[in-house]
Length: 279
Image (tube, rainbow, N blue to C red; front, side):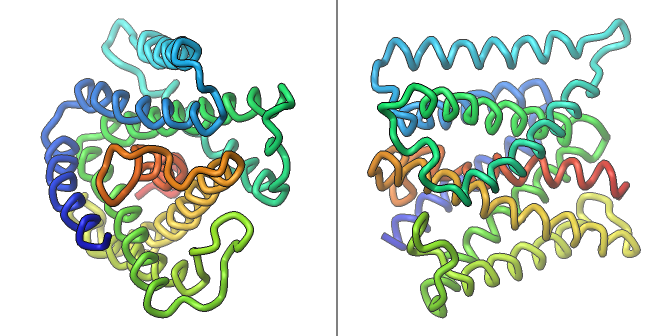
């Protein structure tokens, strides 16, 4: 399984990096919408929406929301990123609320209750759409934005890999045994170390000055922590329905949502931290 994971990563990672660094923001947003909506489709399955027509309608509604955001951001001078930034803030607020949901594991577990599915469908929109907006804001709001998006995603990828290998070799203390029995405190620490190391190594590539590196590290620290929140939240959804993976599209990795669960939580946090800290 480790070999399969590595091979899949070696194939997909260069494609993702090339898209981030070479595509103009409108095309990057379009490509990201396909990926994020693919993750949302799997989220609907974890919310126990089995009917294909119902899931298609819900997906179209979320696509329409994305289109409306882009349309609302158009101005006579070109494109305004204000609405994308507002949606980024919405995303951060949502993931703070998600922490409370994680503390109350049983909430929404019974899909026989109508409110359970409704809350999970709303959560899907609040997780996916603001993350997509954060991606667009980070990529296009400044000249070097495409490089900062690469740094943000590299932080999450490094943290995920660091947590995986540190957890396998050193993991003893469970981080959240009820939600995700395989996650350990040692894995979290390994992920933090790798995420911070990548942030400090790649930030100069994005244009960060030496004096800004502590601010970059602070943003990276918050992003890694919230990537874990995103991972745990998806694990909770899977626990509620007894699923091992969100899908089987990516060999060794599961579904799309299994790969972007940390990204959708980390992106709004890193993007907002970068805007507020001013690096």
